[in-house]
Amino acid sequence: MGGIGMAEATRKDYGALVGWTSTNTGGRVALHLQSVTKPPPHTSDDVQTQIYLLDRNQAMQLANFLFEVGETSTPERRDRSWIKRMFG
Image 1 (tube, rainbow, N blue to C red):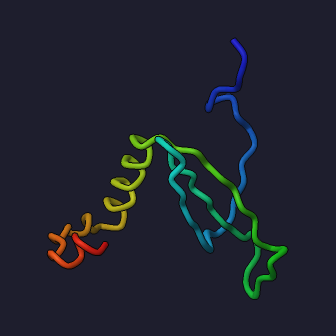
Image 2 (tube, one colour):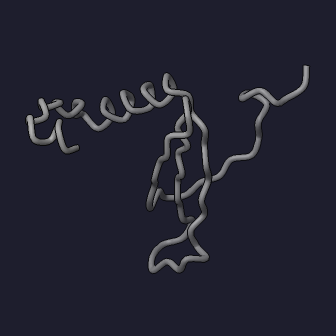
C-alpha cells in the first residue's frame, strides 16, 4: 500500500501561530494557518502559510477540542430578528 502513515512521518515543523483564515469549499473547509519561526519583529518573508483541507466532521472535532483546551464553550446562538431574517 502506498502512502506514509502518521507514525512513519519524520518531518516536523515548529512555529508560532500568527494568523489564520478559513474558506468553505463545498463539503470541506480549507484552513489557512500562518506561522513564524523567529521572534518579532516579523517581515512578510518570515510568515509561512500552510493550507489544510478538513471535512466538516474534522472541522467540528477541531473546534470542540479548541473550546475544551481554551476552557470555554461554544457561543450561544441568538435568534435573528425579523429585520435580519428578511434583509440578511
